[in-house]
Amino acid sequence: MNIPISLNNKNLAQLSDDIVRPHYDRSCVTTGIVHVGIGGFHRSHEAFYTDLLLESGASSQWGICGVGLREPDRKMAKILKQQDYLYTLIVKHPDGRIETKVIGSIIDFMMGCDDPQSVIDRMAHPDTKIVSLTITEGGYNIDAETGDFDASNPDVQHDVQNATQPRLVFGFLTEALRKRRDQGLEAFTIQSCDNIQHNGDLTRKMVLGFAKLQDKDLANWIEREVSFPNAMVDRITPVTTQSDIDFLRSEFDLDDQWPVVCEPFCQWVIEDKFSAGRPEWQDVGAQFVGDVKPYEEMKLRLLNAGHSVLGILGSVFGYQTIDECVHDDLFREFLKQFYDREAAPVLDAVEGIDLDQYKATLIERFGNPNIRDNLARICLGSSSKLPVFLMPTIRKNLSSGGSIQLATLVIAAWCYYSDRHADRHGNSLEVTDELKDSLHEAAKATDQDRLSFLKVKSVFGDLANNERFADTYSEMIQRVYREPDVTKHMRSILEG
Image (cartoon, rainbow, N blue to C red):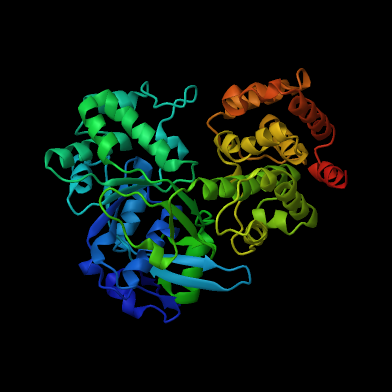
């Protein structure tokens, strides 16, 4: 048996000819982007686009320095350092074809929890033009009640008093911007790459919320000088498994300890608003626009909502992966009808997008049998996802008199999921959600009060007070609790 080749700079020339590898001189690449929160999605998306740009012969100033702020980031830091920050992108096509490509755009990784000052200095360095983020919605420190910056967080209070030893990303950003200002340097752009509606606007609000607590004059400078472009990001990137690592070893004799798996589809729509210049990402497939909102809403209400529709109904039925759902004719038709009856009719037109084609592409992507995106991952954090992905569609249809039955069945099934933590067969379902306990208690009371689940106001707002929705939801709850085989209710709605 061959000993696998370790992935690093000196071994690139030994790799199989079937693996695409960087042809640019990585030793000449300098850090222009500092990225906080390197995980699978960043490596399949922003780092992928940047690698394509470097490969095209564009300026070598756009290398990426990764930053981890939490102890769990240490494993990624260690592996990437051992591999000279190289990793393999495994692109799985629906027809079974697999492309493998070594990505070289990440050139460094720093642990902020070990040495905060070095990270601040890297962000403040004149070469740094962009600090980008994939910190998940939970990383934005949003007060669940007000939607404002949560000043009560003990880490925030620590960072306000200890500017050079921050724990949260806002402290790092603010202190680095203070250094830039004091040195007479232009501000860097802060670019969210998280799958959050109006991600740039939210980032701006949270950064300014922190800065005003620490230094109001600096906050005013940040408000004037720093750009926070909104962006829509899209590429299905499931969690890397041991089988993915084993695939590279068996097929290519390549030892990559943390490759990334993704689908071939990739989209990035970015508001063209940058403080200190930007990469020419449009030359490698990204799209710069004046207003991201229509693209963002399209994706959230179709792709992300579609994921939740299949994820929740499929989980309760007993499926494990998204492709299993799509290869079931009933689930596929239910999703198609959700798009056609409820989601698409309340979307604004999107320039340059054929909506019917986009919907068909989504269903094809979800059905990719080689991605096998786990439903537990899709359902993770549903209390923060559904108010953004699904509730706006319900609210718009309530206002316009449109259909709400399909989406309401999903909410009823989520109540059952939150109550029983099990599928229709009684098999345990993983529930990972900040509001897990609150949702469970509210769902448990459904026998006494059919609307009890809707009274989690941080999720549903005042929807329980809407008579039409409350009546439809009560009907769906009665159906699901009487017969948890959701396919019967799905079929009934489609035939009705």
